[in-house]
Image (cartoon, rainbow, N blue to C red; front, side, top):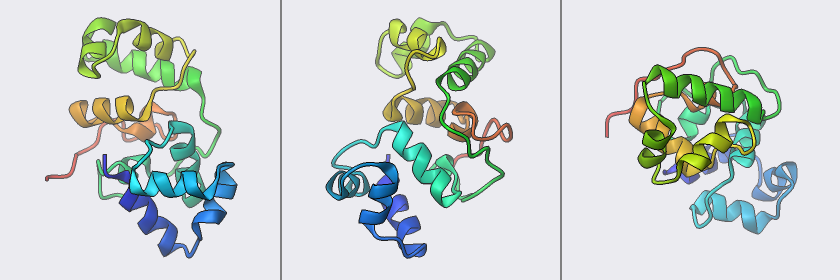
Length: 155
C-alpha cells in the first residue's frame, strides 16, 4: 500500500518524533515505527487519527492522489457513517455483497458487518476498494463529502 513512507514524510515535515505521534495515537513507539516500515498494517482508526492530527488526506497517505489536504470533518471515526457510505457505493456500482467481498478476497458476511456498522473496514480492504473503483477513502470514512471519486496517480 506504500503508506509508511508518506506517514514518515508528513511526520518529519512537521518535525514530530515517532514517540510523540505514537503517544497521540495511544500506542507504543515500536508499534508506530512498524507502521512507517509497513511491517505491521496500520488499523484504520490509527490511520484516520494520524490524518486528522496532520490535517492530511487519507487518499494522499494511501498514494491514491497527490492532493495532501482538503476540507475535512475532523470528527471521530464513525462505523455507521462509513458503513452506510460503503453500502451506498456498492449499490451505485450495482455490486452484490458477495461480488464486493470477492473483490477484497473476503466473505459477504464481512461486507454485511461493515455496512451495518458493526465493524470498521480493514485498511487493506479499504485500499483495495478505493484503488479498484477510484473512490475516495476520505469520502468512504466520512471525513469529506467531496470529492467522492478521485483521479488516481499514474504508476
